[in-house]
Image 1 (tube, rainbow, N blue to C red):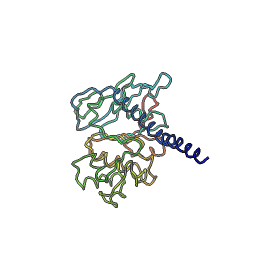
Image 2 (tube, rainbow, N blue to C red):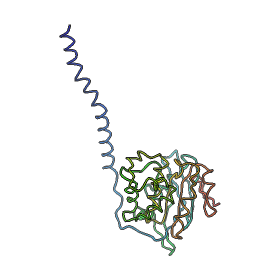
Image 3 (spheres, rainbow, N blue to C red):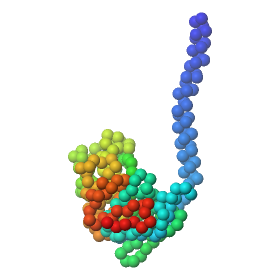
Image 4 (cartoon, rainbow, N blue to C red):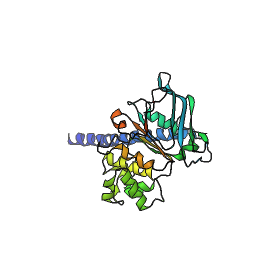
Length: 273
């Protein structure tokens, strides 16, 4: 009986070891699939960057649908003037993020066009070459492991300490100033709350030298005391800059300044207010 038990143990041992490798194998297969997907992604057209000192966005009869049964934007017309603050308001799935992706030239509309223009009357079709004029803060956490200073310098490697502190104040991230720029933060903001990580991401964006700031759900992880109106206003202190923000509820957008507009992506012509 003892010999039988020992033999059974010798047989079960290798099978138990095999089961430990199953999660590793599954993760490896998933990683390979992602690498294959990246390799199959068509390359964007190359060309010299088109950099503007001032920037506005004009949308002309844009229609976009993910499939034949789901039209997100239908013949949308709107002008984001230079130096303006625009709040894009709509429920989840209304097309706020889709509109930002169109402005970033990450997707192309099925009909209509988008163009970026300056105060000299020059305009260019939105493309990867015009993306250098845009500063984008996406939804979610985009903090990397390192220090707060390291994360801010990703926005502008030549930024001075005073510029970084000013960006943190503008983004309502005084907590980072109290901790110090050399305070450590983990991957995806480990050691920070979601709201704190989002504020640092916004401060990093404010350091970039773009003329158009795009904020996708900038208040989704922050408390009500951190009013969003504190964010775009300093950005537009320079007349050459404007700000486009995406919100999911009207209460937040209602806090906008009098120079702002509300855009509902599902409407044909976006109304001003």
